[in-house]
Amino acid sequence: MKKAWAGVLQAAQIENFRWHDMRHDFASQLVMRGVDLNTVRELMGHADMSMTMRYAHLAPEVKMRAVEMLV
Image (cartoon, rainbow, N blue to C red; front, side, top):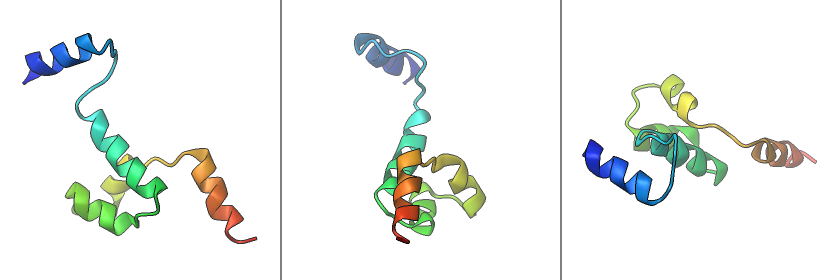
């Protein structure tokens, strides 16, 4: 698998990217589209929310839109 993955990255001219990085993107994309964190936790297979929070990085504009909902 490692050899195939390295070949894919090389063919796509992608550097400094790991298979595991896609988990971070998956969680972040779900959160930025409004999926609640507990659902993301379940989809990721995490036992507790603290691990999910490590994966679910929010872009600054998403945080701004959240605050703007109060206006």
